[in-house]
Length: 492
Image (cartoon, one colour):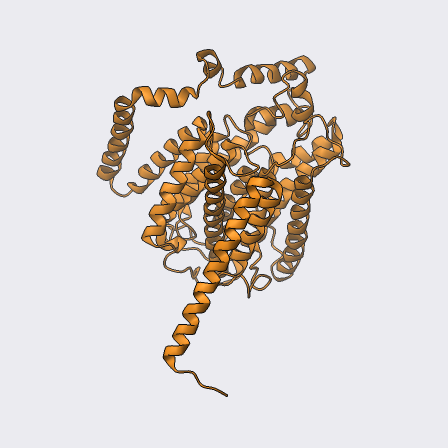
């Protein structure tokens, strides 16, 4: 056996590091080039690299199926997989035989997560069979499932509604883990938000790489390969809110990485030119500022005053540029109609009224075959609230509103579990964007993040504990000790 001097060992490790870094750069360059030639193949390679980087970082490789290490990856899969569209398919075509590859992949991922959820839930129930109170989270998805009975596209309605229950099941499994193993669950939550920010960072860099190499055409709006600019803006705004609300120490990033991500996400949101997301982000940041000063009224009102003044001065100083940006090259009439949304919503309401479907709707997801007959560009109602009204009647928007109110009502009390700022910021952001987008109404980012934000609230509601005003005491069911959370987890 040959023993090497410490100096040679350091040199060898340095050469290995350089070689590995060079290999990663070469592969990344090949992925970018392939994305320019064929978006589908390039994006698939990018996702494989992303998953590989996550699996082989920190504890992912060794504990993927130990201590429920698969759960953060499941949240990411449910959140991102429905949002990529690389092939065109008519909204009127709902047959299984013509389903695109990304649709089959999406349903396959949901099926895998569903199988893991069922298996894990069965094991957890053996230890603690006490039912989990789910609040209003499950209410309107249950109506969506029942609407299969009268839907004009029953197969599509059944599959899409069952996808909603996969996110709900994953949330309840995580609640059960939290009630029995608080430290483990807190670690899973932290890994999930870290992986979310990491995934958005990776895809945003990929988007900038492909955009810069292909050239910035007139009317350019930033997007990732295979995604709509509005969806990308919503992802980046959510990641930015999580970044600001959680802080760099909780996410495990250095100051330089924190600032870089802030600038990266802000640039992507600006270049996506999605006005609804910009408005939602402004409201969410205002909520974070207001919540930050809850213990000091002077700082709260001063912070709110500075925020309003800063936005006002920005608008006054660059009023022409801001106006051109908000117009986005459209006419005044088109902008006043919210780029066609108001007439579309009027059509949806007329259809419901003419058919007298206010109570039961036409069936979950039926808008994709009803609306294109009246507005060929519309595959959905472009509003979570109108989409649910069209799908399952007046109870849909009412139950969605009840669910959002439920989370916001109890979020201030979860300081001993996770940061209330994260939950409140994300929920407010998504609630505002849901006015002109279908994030909450369909499987994907919006509903998955809603289910994730439900988790700490349901933990608080299901735990047996003395309701201390300070919110510092939570006793898990069947345990005598306090929740043993890491120091960086506890707080606001």
